[in-house]
Image 1 (cartoon, rainbow, N blue to C red):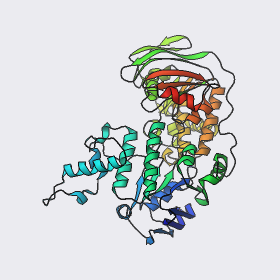
Image 2: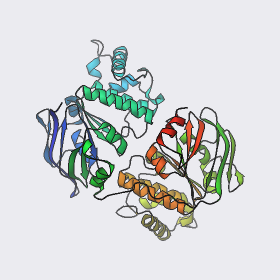
Image 3: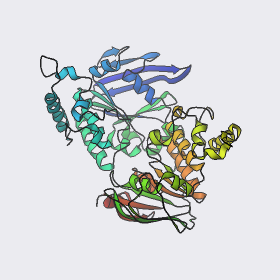
Image 4: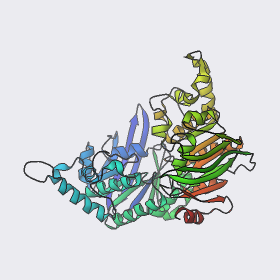
Length: 497
């Protein structure tokens, strides 16, 4: 199919005199999976918000199915047939799957003349859409009981149930495993065969080249190019996105390793994981890999004291320690960067400075009062050391790009001078240029003798960064592989045992 369904011409949008979008264009065809690529700050989010009616452009034209769209609301755009699946999944936890799918469109399926909603009709219709997508989820179950991956599938069902002809998917695989990605791609291919167009936003290069037909790149709010995916490879796409070549995505590993700093022996937590044993040396990066639900985050939370293990031992520098809380972990030199930086990593209302010094605030006090000058010096030094791009120390962290937010979260942990750092999905949702900066930062920490545990769902990342890789399957440790012996195929073999 080659018929154009959506065309954006010369789109421009400014905020406080600064252009977020500058003369941007995009052409989408029926039955096409079209990637929209660019670093954080490239203008992708602004572009999508305009397309779904959340923002109005300053100038430019949006033509959908031959008709120009002007001043339309989100609801009007949705009714026309453009739906968006957001990176931050928008659900009401206490409502059922069926109720979430038809939320806001209840009038379409009122069951009787009295105007009362017929839950039976909703459930039947929801089951039909889920079945059509090959998704095995009970439409009567409340959303709060679903996994993130299942919630993602419900969001797709919601878009399809709206008879969408264009579906925007923003980082749809950021919180799901490789197996669930395969299921999602099967759905995308099925939608494509029915003529539905998909605008696909992701920072994961492997996905882009597997599922997308066409790639459009934005940089600094400007349109760079549109090319067939078959014309590009990873290096040429990265060069288009960042304006320069990054020849080796993963920095050279730290070769010198010190003494064992962390030793975990026979760690168990009922229903989560069992018999977990490993060591991490000074300057070593231990990667942890496994499918969703394998117990990766649960092990990290146990070591950090967020959800302590039932039994087993943890030794630091040969001495057994008891970790009942994060305070115990910090006191023993353990730092933790959560996979959910927006919920657990920083406080959005606070500035870059306040977030950076949050975990080490007592060091910047004079008596019971904060020494602002001392805090400023510490924050400025951390901003410089980590190359955090911000307008200044007092900028709110919520206004930074994803990569710079992650640097702030890591900086906050570093301010407490840890000997061990646990990084859970350290590059989730950040662009390729920022990933490279985070990788360099991780390697520099290892070079300083910090022991690092890195959990990641991205196999190329685990393989590229880790000295050794521990593989988990259903809460069981199935292998510890050296850098030399580890391959994607071998990791997957142990991850599905």
